[in-house]
Length: 481
Image (cartoon, rainbow, N blue to C red; front, side, top):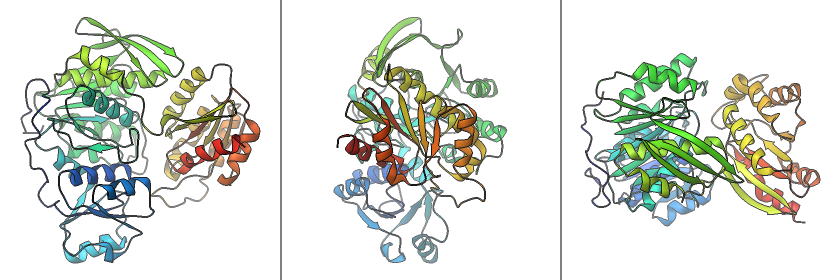
């Protein structure tokens, strides 16, 4: 367990973090891949605290422009010359390879190379941290907490793996003592944090390049629970099998309070009702013997579960549950998490970041409820060769929940191609499950194909963690012709 004692008492609206404004050594940081979701958030907070932030990314973006507006220097492309002579450290993610010229230059100069998780951990020093973990739902739950705590005037700092409502809105340096952060298990980097409150939404096998088995995933999440500060709280699902297994492993840890949430009869925060209302849901829970009801302004049972996790964590941090429940109703979504992109010719286009089969099925079920009598048409882009190798068949089975789907080529992200691993694995599995599915290797043809398929009342879902998101506006434009 961590030896750092937690702060006590409810969250305060005034008074900033007690730690240094800019962590030692990060006063002139250089970020390699500064436009990434996790990296840009850390860079933004450092810039807001007064650091002279610089970095590079492979392409220009709205996020890069938002960072420049904060005073950061953002280079496009990677070159050793981008590393300023007075840089004090280089910040990297696990996706940055050793042959990157800026990283190589930093090594030659003997500059400290800091993993993004360690940089984020240093930003959380001196705060009352709430870390949100789980195989799915981290970004949404972190966003819900950040929006609700902000709405209550508590001035939280936050670092989220997605934008709330605009590029660059994934992070903020607040004036309050709470710091809400998304805790990424993909490369075990969440083991750098020592939160006062931790959330584990679910535990499943993913990120196959880093985890050889589900047992390794459990070991990692157990170690994460052990990082909670003495006297702190682990908020964990009472319904998801992997989370239930985690609870059985961590109950009895010295100084750890375990609070469960879900529909299980013995859940500490028990969900008594979830009622879908189109693109919203009404939720009722019982917490400490009190019934609370609130609205979640995004569709789907899984988003309602995320809101209840946020409620339980905020209550564990001392925020009045009744106030927090009302404030959660102010959350209207995060970019790429069932985000409505627009409507044209009577067809709605919605974007989903789902890329794991469980996420895909959950979003498709939510959209099915919202579509009513209309059809659900999906453009899916598999993400990572390793994930497609291990879970491609399950991805295809999830697509059977759509009325029709197009499957693009695999988005490689940080991985190199693997012989025999293509999106055909997903297409074949989808067809075996009875889905109306076709492969489409030319993404530029998709807007025209969808415009020809869609009818008024239909709903088009662009789905995946890659650049499939760029197709939404193009589909809308083609529908509007």
